Structures are given as structure tokens and as C-alpha cells.
Length: 256
View 1 (cartoon, one colour):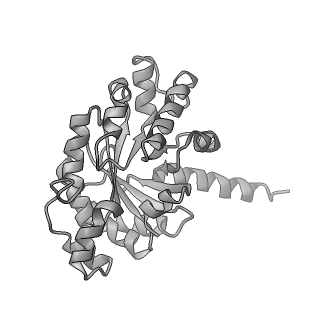
View 2 (tube, helix red, strand yellow):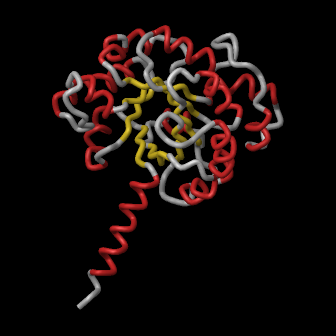
């Protein structure tokens, strides 16, 4: 089932957040309990070439692939979709103008200006009917606008009103820096939680999906109650550290 269909069914979707541009690492991630895999180009090590190569094992595993592009790299949004990604997360969408530029790269006409050339992704997904792909891709592929600043929060309704924006994705660390006026980075900052809840509520009222990066996984239930359904956890270093500690602690616990 596609990411769009799962979120439309109000499912909670957990995506791994990959920073390492290595296809074999992605292949292993796809064998874990994660529902999807996100390749991070903004702060992670992924680039154009690794997105091309790392999207293949995600598709082969039958899981949705997402890409977070660098700030303003809307050309890469189109390329990520051409490579087979189902969704793109765009950072620092601070205005309706930013949202419209993002949509232009994400959606085929008449909704956007995405250029036709999805041969790689179509081959990977065994899609031979180009007419069906053209008619269905605008609904199947998802554009997530990141809300990370006070300016974005103030423009939220205008961003949500842009046709072709399918959802918002909160970057809680950056949002906490903005909310505290640069005094701290704290993804669980209690003072901003009212705004975090408001973002999800307004997104759902607009018929859009809400996602968020989980720095503290113990807060997932609270965020779900607010209306968030797409949750990102990662990257590989965090996952390996947590897994290694669990296994070593279990082994040490058997010592008499």
C-alpha cells in the first residue's frame, strides 16, 4: 500500500531516517520493523547519486521511500520522484510562495510544472502504463512542507491552502530554536507544545497530513493524539547505538 493510502486510512507510519549514503545499509534498514525509509539530503550524507542508488532497495522491499531535499533544491524533488520516491520533504517552507515553488516541482500539470521523465522509477515499480502514471501520480506522490520557524507558523494557513501541498512535517529541533529565540534546542520544549498541537490540528482541518521527527520516542503517543501520523526516527548511528546497548546489556545480564 502506498504512503498516501496508508496516511489516508489514518494509519501511523514510522519511517527510518537515513544519513548514510550506502545502498547495503538501506537494504538492511528495509528488513527492520520500519514502515518506510527516508533519505536525508539536508543534514545527512545523501546526494543525488545515493538517492538514485538507495531508492532501489526500498522499492524492492515494497516500502515507501521518502527524500528530504536540501533547502531550496526543488529540482531534486522532481529527480527524487523520477527515481521512485513516493514523497519529498522540503525544509524551510516559510511562505505560500515557497510552497508554490515546491508544488511546481512535485506535481504534473495542470497542478504543477513537473517535467515528464519518470522512466527509472516506472521501471523499478514495473509501471508500464504511462497514461495511468500521468493521471495518478499527483495523488500518489506526496509533498510535505516542513514547518520549522515562527515565520512558517505564522504563514501556516496560507501554506496549507496551496493546492498540491499534501502535508506538513514539523522539525521540532529547529522549531524549538525559533520558539525560544535562539536560547535552546529542545525538541520536547514544553512551551512550544501548544503550537505543535495547533499545527497538526490545522493541517487535519485542511485535509492535509501531519508528520514529525521523533527525537524522544516516548512522546509518540502524545503527538499521535494531537493528530500526527507520520513519524521519523533515526539515523543509523542512533539505531546502531540503541541496538548495541540492548544486546550488550542483555548479554551482561546473563552473567552470574
